Length: 97
Image (cartoon, rainbow, N blue to C red; front, side, top):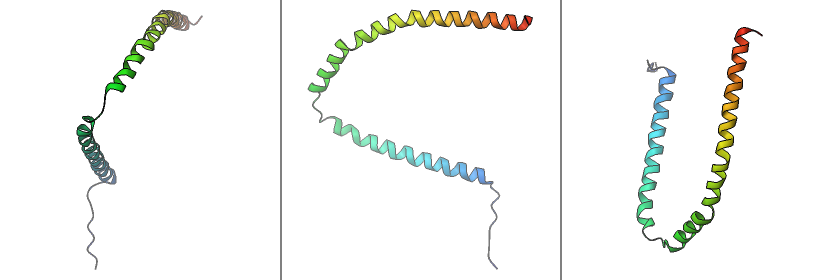
């Protein structure tokens, strides 16, 4: 006769434990990979990279600031108009007109 053990644990709990074990192993793998990146970063020549970042900050970002400052008032106006229209629509709906 076979000795079969019947688990008192439902299948969902088993799946949860397996998913947790998978998450823990994934996080462990990612963290060990990040630990190896630190020493390699010390050998990078940063002069060209900082030049690219400085060029982007002086040429690209002012145009983005202009875009945002010109678009924000329009978005605020549309939000206020949408709120007022919806508010009045709800009042008329409550009055059933």
